[in-house]
Amino acid sequence: MTLPIDSGTTVTLHFSLTLENGHIVDSNFEASPATFTVGDGNLLPGFESPLMGLVDGDEREFSIPPENAFGQHNPQNVQAVERNNFEDGELELGTMFSFQNGDGELPGVVVEVQDNEVMVDFNHPLAGQIILFTVKIISVTPQSVH
Image (cartoon, rainbow, N blue to C red):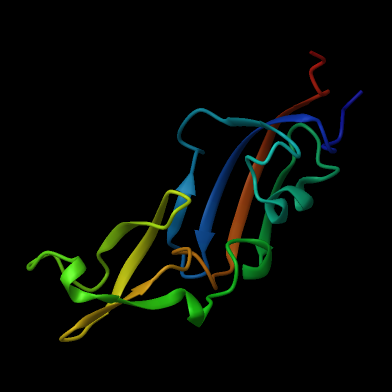
């Protein structure tokens, strides 16, 4: 009897995340499959919900909209940082820096350099993108009992 994917089941799968332009963001089809338990927080809910009901051997491709993937691009997350926080020569558009924000490190990407300040985008790099989520289910097992 095949067990469908449901909350608490352990799933082993191959997956890829691809942008609409064909750029592959992440894929493990050429590597070992990933294993996770549905609901354990390892996979964003927007990527878990389309898997519900799939069984061993299923292969599917889902289009995940930004609000269910990495969020919409939020203009309020683009902020000015004083230029003197950076060393000369390290400021290039597209450069990623880690900033301390009290909760730990927050990555930001330089999007504009001005005389006295630098505009830094703190949105997730995949914010606003539709993600094509391709999966091949290897196995579905019941939740392990501790």
